[in-house]
Amino acid sequence: MEQIHKRGLSTQEIESLVLKLPGAGVRLEEFLVRNGLAPELRRVLASKGVRLIKQQGEEGCEEEMVEHLRRDKTGYALALVNELRESGADESRVPELFRSLISQITQRTI
Image 1 (tube, rainbow, N blue to C red):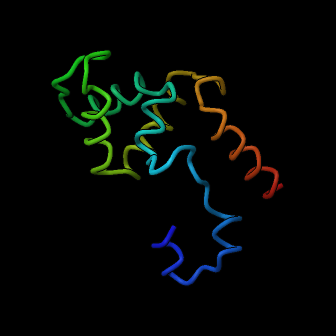
Image 2: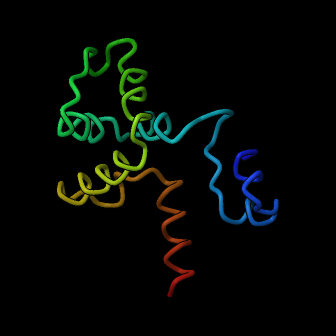
């Protein structure tokens, strides 16, 4: 939040535009992996040529995935959206926090 504030946004603008993830210090990659999207993110990483050492469910697997995802947040986020679309995933695959956010955004633009 401090970095955003340094860019000149007011506290009110930050509060209305920035989504805070639940938990102290939780980053987007961690949130997505730990909230049900690990299978899709594994496929995304594989499609980008990333070979994970740890297997699903193995200790340290989530941390390994998060480390790779942090290297290209935007690219992997877009690839995740495409993976969800191509697999025919319905809204139940998306964490409630993001479903709510998407609903709010689409209502603003209508």
